[in-house]
Length: 149
Image 1 (cartoon, one colour):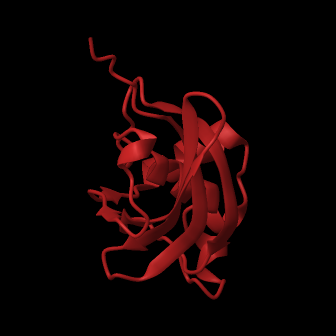
Image 2 (cartoon, one colour):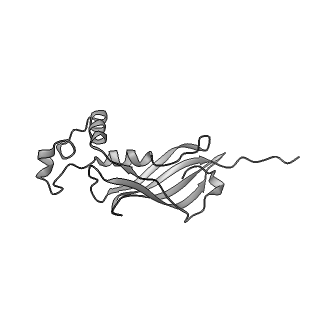
Image 3 (cartoon, helix red, strand yellow):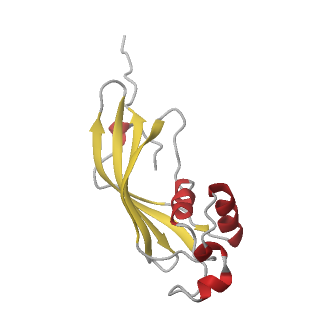
C-alpha cells in the first residue's frame, strides 16, 4: 500500500492485503514481549467464563500484526505519522485470519520533500467481520523532480 510517492495517491483509492492467521504462539509471545498477561488472553479457564467463552488476541497484537500486512516502499516511507480513532469492534480468536481493507481519505503536502497519506484502516477476519478500525497516517516522500536539460 505505501509503495508510492505522495503525488501518486488519489483520494478514494482502495487496497486489500493478504491474510495472516493469529496463533496461540502469537498471543503468548506478545504477552511475554509486552508484559500483558491479562487472563482474557492467556488463561483458557478464565476466558471460558467470559462472554467471549475463549481466549482472544490482545487488541495491540491485532494492530501489530496488521502493520506487518502493509507493503512499505523503502526510500519512500519516512515514518508512521499517527493513528487516530482506534476502535476494537469484535474479538479476534486464536485461529482467525485477519486482513486489511484500506481507503485513502486524504493526501496532504507538508513543507519540503514530504507529505501525509491518511487512510481508513479496517482490519477484518475471514468471516468479513470488522475487528478493528482506525485512521492511519503515514508520512511519505514526494516524487523527486527530474531535471530536464
